[in-house]
Length: 393
Image 1 (cartoon, rainbow, N blue to C red):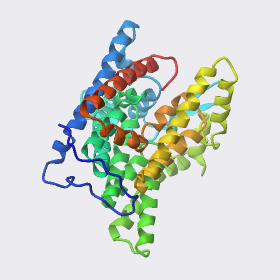
Image 2: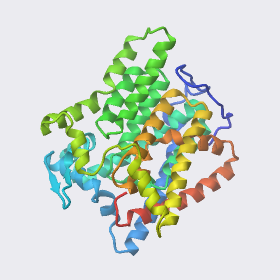
Image 3: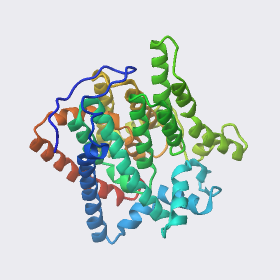
Image 4: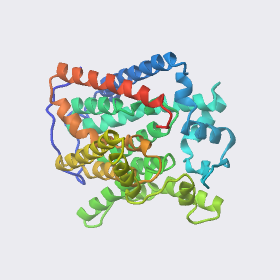
């Protein structure tokens, strides 16, 4: 059952706050169980709609989830290691070193001990990691605004239009799980855990830098308030946080023989950061042509996520959430590359959903359930449509 504890507004960190009732004697699993059941139900709906739609189109839902686009690159790394390069017309070079190693490493390990292919091991990792991510997201929401808000936050994250990616053999679910629990550890002052999880997040996706930033800036703010006196655990956590990201980028640099090796690899894929110029030009091109409606929708979507971030600032969200969500959003909006993937790149930025979760938690339970039911059904249909399209998510 949902509890009726009032939704509160918190001052920003670096003070560490604990919501009333969070540290009581009830087991953590029991507190999180309603959120996890809600998450499982919404994702099951998405998978059911995908299965029905894919079968009617003569497509395999299993292949759509496990063996397309980035999933193929992860599986190949798991089976053969790094070293594959694809040369395309126009001079582009796609190297598998663009993909960080934690997911393919887990795929390799699981496929070695279980009767699973690397692709199916990737699905298993995503399934488990998505539940861990939902739990971490709930823990953050509950800590700050109460149990109802935590459940609403999980429901909103599960029902994102691109939520189907959470069930694919992609690295987003794994990264979000590590990021959410790292941020939760910062909020509760568990600095060693925060640093270790940030290091693992840095081995999962390039945007692991956002988790490192959340740890570092929150620690810096606390040190400033304490007169530059910090605990040994805090300083060790700060030192641990960037090691995963730095280790992989350094390895790519050594392997490629260039200090800018990873940036060069990303450039071969047409990726990189230009302050949003390429994305802005793309939107302007859509607005000036027959795809005006698509351009307008894209512009509205960008405006919405920026508004949500500003709402989080007005809501006085704690510093690690603002830093983490802001960096994920900034990196997604200022990156070049395939613009259709931007919604997926922003999916780990769950703090952006907190203002909506707080508003949803204030509604009567029946009304909130009806709203989320409609949103979940729409998201399930859009996710199936998106995954059955020609371009990668």
